[in-house]
Length: 361
View 1 (spheres, rainbow, N blue to C red):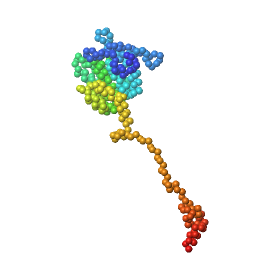
View 2: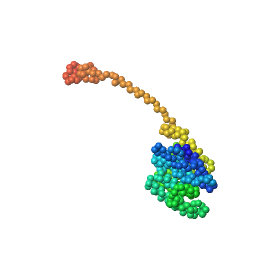
View 3: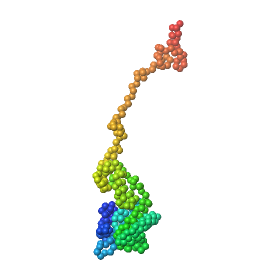
View 4: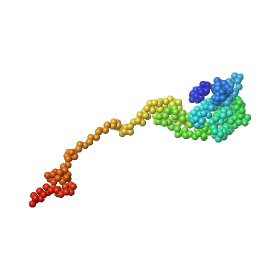
């Protein structure tokens, strides 16, 4: 009850709601949570004070002197469901979790319609009602083929859908448990079909486990997708078992294939519990950080510190000064070997030129 008050739907789904048992005929009967009135809102706030009432249909114990009763879905439950739809979306795992918890208890057609009003916008609700009616008409035709001793033999469209003379929720609450269970199954199928139409998701065959994804998280995704796309519960279980094996990552598939005997999903989850754990994440990180050079099979060499480049020594010729003639002012020869007739500035020169001329005579 504490989990219900706090809105801990994961815990509720795990532990179950302790307010029902099955009789010898397989019918669910509420036993521990007695119906209570809807909590009153105090101090002008939006939150109800006090305890939350039991889920809708209360079936009294045989020979207890009590009567079957019906209560509306708890205000807190409806509020949480609306909040999850607004926050996460109609087809989200959070919304589906609350629906699964609600579906564990016995519901009347009034409750199915109430859930539709909480979940859907006006156009979506119209689609839901049309889908619901088609499924109910089909179920009512099937009931006509049942033995006369079966309580469902007289259950027609109005009884299964809560319309006409069965529109009163108090009257719905006293219907046979088998009739209510059939109405609940058909109504929930219509809800899920409409959710799938309103919030399309990937086909369940397209859901695969990531390389470092937890196997349990992968199974939860696959189960949620199958729940919205496959009506038959037995078929869902078979498909889930095959799907999680075929679409698991390589490491998990090897572990699953090594399991002995007929492998159930719970066996696979337990065997693959450590896949996607810290060890695998560290291995993946190490592989990611490994240098590209490792693919060549050689250890990458540590880069050597670059050597300082030495400047080339200047050649001897660069150090030897070029001689310049003091007589003519031109470079490349000494004064004693000058044969120029003019100076670099254009003036006529004397001296060596005349000596050279006389020696030539």
